[in-house]
Length: 244
Image (tube, rainbow, N blue to C red; front, side):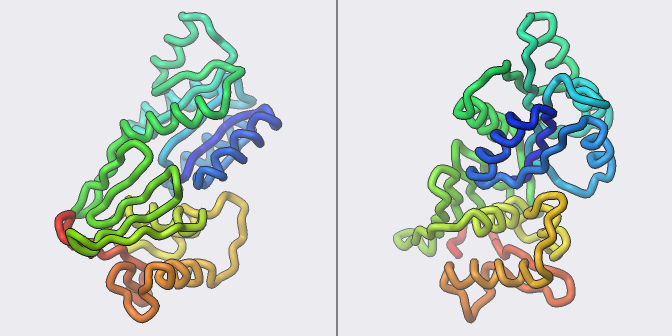
């Protein structure tokens, strides 16, 4: 999952980013609301969740929320603020924020609120609807467990295997599972799975997919993750009912 964090307190922003990165989020962190606004306007990056501080240099979190909703963008937003008056909470929620967290807060509560926002969101694939359940994502015969960073793959009614994934393998497979049967280009993968400013080597996507196939026991087969030569890659899930 890719998350947009806009927080001008450097220590707090760094702490949030560290915790979220450990939870397999790809985090783009901006210290300035205007910079975040300009980046959002490009429309290139697909975010799953956003965290906005209320008081920001340039453009406030409230203004960012209003901008998103004025364009009918449904990106779930968690608002961070030291403001705890009821009137201010109402302003934040009416601006388009989906939830509200008052500073200071614990990281465990922050993660719980993000999980709640994630459960509310719906993700629709080309022929499948990925099912987002508490701490897991299921598409067809594949189940990703967010708590353990494991993949469960159902081969038949009686046979299944569990694979332990690295953070990057987890992020890569999750991105494919949120877009089942879609052809995804190398540039799209880099844009979604590496943070702004990162400069991955040219063959990093091919290398990560090769490692993931090897872990799934598909060194000589591309039945699950296909290479569409000259275009990109595709997670080949034929239906939600059949094993793979």
